[in-house]
Length: 480
Image 1 (cartoon, rainbow, N blue to C red):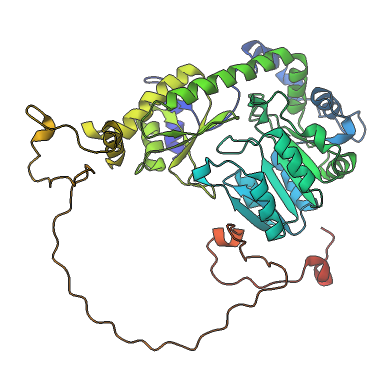
Image 2: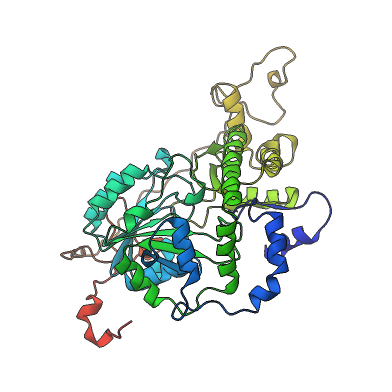
């Protein structure tokens, strides 16, 4: 597939490819800022980055000023992925709870490092909205010692109200750690001050994460930061590698400092594009569009539509790149996450998506026909049958096609004679085996009600033995 995608950019025929997979900021940096960056590129890449041990840590100081936070409460990383790795390594001890579907780095990283990942399933029937009261109850029942809340969440873009999040932090004050991942918060507009960074610096067990590279329109420049109380922030800073940021990332921070008004205008334009994109996608029959506060929009395809097929046909037939969510725990390939793009790009996407989904009636596009059935039912108020009569195409059934079932519009299958079934043969059953004895506390691999463990997700079916904690195994205490 990588070769096919590369060929889209090499082929100059027709309209150029448009990438709806990676969320970002198409309006920042401005063309003039790119010219300025190009003019200084040689100077930037031939200079050594600052050393926080000997310099005044310019990046941290500048970001702290932009976030209106004390410098001792901020730690800067080579993207939020680096910060998450060190948080998992140093602050998550036994278990971590996370609602799913969400970013794979929260479900994958702790499982790889041997932590129990307690997955709280968000319900499709509720629009994947996070009920913080139910989540708190899940944490208590599961005995999780750390919790994550992504706001806005990836891939649906939903977020709870700030006041509800603050109440959740109050309730979870006894946990080892609560991480509020605000990687996509830059484009939220439902509340004037949605961030919890100011709350984090006042609480000893709360970390707020912010991603900057993508929101600044430079996803190739890895840049992220966290806000926490001075002790927590200082602990993470002490673990970060020396000179973990390159000189290019440092220069990007200065762009944000010097071009703040242009960055604010770019965020407003993305919010406007999101409203336009949501409205245009909502015009497609059978497509469910979820409200978003991020720079991407989640859609559910009509019944029967397969996301991988839709993705491939948009790529090959329309030079449009989209991301299906089949690799996300708690989701499926029936969902597409679409990055917010300028309105001209969306005007290409919507008719292309409509053709792929519904053009099977004309012999092209999505070939299962189920989406066409959905549209037929929608156009006939659920009856599924178009009016019949003289001159109507529906009045004369096609040769060789059985008549539809009344009220469904779906052809009845041909009658099949019953197949005789042999009487069952008695089978000797082995002696019953005693069930696994539960431990005093919930061991790894045992699900809570409504939850999944990482072992279950990977398909493990055998019981997982309860092992002593690491501190109870002195022969394995290596100090890491």
